[in-house]
Amino acid sequence: MKILIVFATNSGGTGIAADIVKETFIKNGHQAEVKEVRELNIDEFADFDLVILSSPTWDYEGLEGQPHPDYRPFMDSAQNKKFTGKKFAVLGLGDSSYTYFCKAVDHLEKFVKQLGGTLIDMSLRIDGFYLDQETNTQKIADWSQSLSQKLS
Image (cartoon, rainbow, N blue to C red; front, side, top):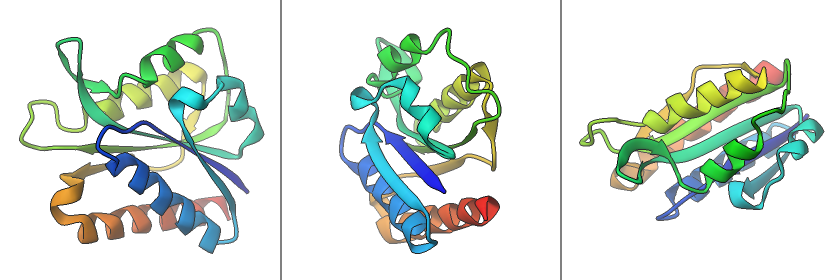
């Protein structure tokens, strides 16, 4: 199966998480590709069996709990697109000391629904990625392993 992991990042954590997901899928015999959302055309979704959207939660234009700002133009460009039945998963990084912990996940799940996509598993929310990188790396790898098994 072909997997696309889409991410945006500020401090690099979401990029690291995307690479962990990629390596897990490759170890399980899948093809996996990582792309930054700002370098992606929505039509590329059609080329993949599973699309994983990943973002930190952001305070965007005074609105706390948003996906990374690079997701805004991408999501806007997809307004009339449909990927009915396309498999998706969502990964979010956040900080539980903020009011809206991993709220970007909710926005990305809504986006998947607007596209007509199907979430194949519960979304993963990671708290304080860098505060316990070893534990969080394992959580991401375990979640990715579970997703991989759902595709087999």
